Image 1: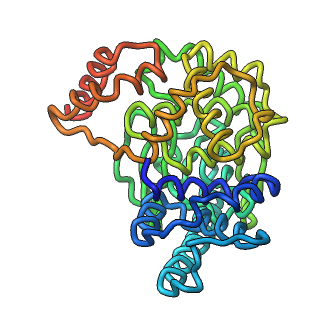
Image 2: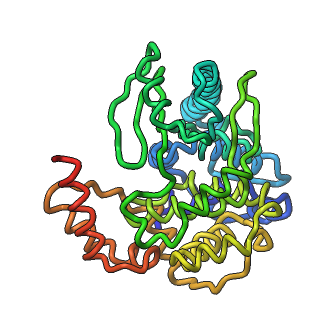
Length: 364
């Protein structure tokens, strides 16, 4: 792992760890080195973690006796650039909330029923400062079985543009933000091996979703148990096909800090076990405990493999996503055999054949 990657991880740890852990971290020799500012800020920006890394630096600067090569008073250009990133992140979050509220209000006024908002906004609420989590898509799901009606409503609303309609969700754009209207939580062609994940998630949202008001408009957010199942499933899909992002890791940690006591861990660990996700979940939790200072009491005790955890965090920090293009698809699946083994009890070759089949169907 590069010096910049080590420093980046320590800044993220500083943003979220306890005061006691922060005091210990403030004396870390990594902060006394000469800093490659362009490289460090470039890596932070590539991961869209500018505001959170800055929060970590601010917390460290508040520690008595903290001496650092990260002295922004002597690096005015970097300080202003970083502060500009932070302002943009906060403005984007405010805009995201307004678009979400406008979407919810429009759908509600046209009889679309109850709208569940997945991932983004609800997960941001778990952060110390929600506006410092970078925003992405707005993911919605109809709690009243009106997904097709929502697509029709979106296509008629001025400013919305339905870009494509996939097997799992449609994809629209509005005011610069991607809107994904989900038909399924998992993938339709995974029913033969998901061992009831989709049914478990649908059963949970039907009875345990929580009403929430944003800018005067009503939406619903998933339960803690739903998120504990869905977030690990979703992260595992990214890991085997692309990579896990640092934001996904901090989403999981901040979710656990706020909601762990509300999770039905018996059900969650049962679902993980049935779907070959226990080893992956343990690996993610271990990395958060060792590298981010997460309290191990927040998660069930699972067998750990420290070698896999090291390999995982190095992969997250250094491996670029691979895109599927022709024969590169085969190379991608071959290079990521370990990713598949750790997340799914299915041969990499069979997964490749299913991916090829899905690609051919989408082109037909």
